[in-house]
Length: 364
Ligand SMILES: Cc1cc2nc3c(=O)[nH]c(=O)nc-3n(C[C@H](O)[C@H](O)[C@H](O)COP(=O)(O)O)c2cc1C
Image (cartoon, rainbow, N blue to C red; front, side, top):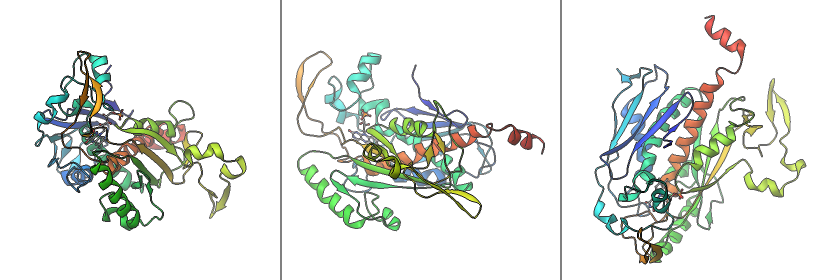
C-alpha cells in the first residue's frame, strides 16, 4: 500500500511529483472557524523555497500556494482543505542521464525494486519537493497551535563539523543557515565553500523546541508521543536519526543525573531539569519538547560515482542538475511542520481520554 496520509484526527495526504504539473496536500479534520488565507501558508513555504542563498539550489521556484477548498469568507469550513503549488521551473532534461541509472544515496534503485517503474525526473515522489505538501499543511497546524499558546523555535544546530556555541534566537533569521550563532554561520559558509569546490555536500543537525504543550498528550504504548514525533520526522527524506531530550547521550549518563526531579511552583508541578525533552512514558509532561533531526549530506553530487544501470551495466555517473550543497537550511521548516502536524493530531486525539471531559463538553 502506498501510504501518503498522516495523522488520526488531523489527517494530511500529500500528493504530486517533483516534475508533474503540481504538488500539494489535502488536510482533513481541521475544525471550522480558523481564520486562514494563502499568506498564512505562503510564509511557511517561503522558508523552504530554493534560491534564497548560494547554498540552496538555484532553481527559481515561485512555490505559490493556492487554497482550492475548505475555506469560505476567510475561515475554515470544517471540510477538506486542498492546497496546491504548481511546478513552474522544472527542467526535465537535467535528469536525462539518470533515467536508466541508479543515483547513489537516492531512492531510485529501491523505488524500481518495489514498483518496477519510476518517474525519474528529479526523484518523482521521493523528491525533496514532496515536502511542499507537508509544509503547507504544517502552516495550518501551526496556526491552530499558535491560537492555543503552543509555539516553535526551530534552527540549525550544526552543519558538517561546525556547531553553534551560543543561542541567540534573534540571529536565526539573519543568516542563510537559520543558525542562532552568527560566528558559527560564517564558519559553516566557509566549510560549504570548500565542499562545493570539491563537488561535495554536507549534512547537519536541526533542533526543534516546542513550548506550551500541555501535559498529557501521547499514549502509553504504541503511539507514544516521542515515537509519533520520531516517525513523523524520520519520514522526511535525508533524515537519518531523531533524538528527544538528551537523546543518545543518556547511554553515557547515570540515573542520578538523567532523572528530572519535580517541585511545586505556585501550585503547579514543574520539573527541576529537562533531560527527558518534555516527554515521559510516551506522554508530554508540560515542559518544553526538544527534538533533534540528523540530516545526511545531499546525495546528488557532481563528482563521478560508481553505480549501475537498470540493465545491470557498471557505469560512472556524474549528476549535473542543480542541487543544494546542504539540505539542512531548507529542511528546518519541514521538521517544524512535521512536529506541528504531530502535536495537533495528538491534541485532537487526546480530547477523548477522560470521560468527565466528554461529559462536560456535551452538557454545554
Ligand atoms: C527539503 C529537502 C530538499 C532536498 N533537496 C535535495 C536536493 O536538492 N538534491 C538531493 O540530491 N537530495 C535532496 N533531498 C534529499 C533526497 O530527497 C533524499 O535524500 C532521497 O530521496 C533519499 O532518501 P533518504 O535519504 O531518506 O534515504 C532533499 C530533501 C529535503 C527534505
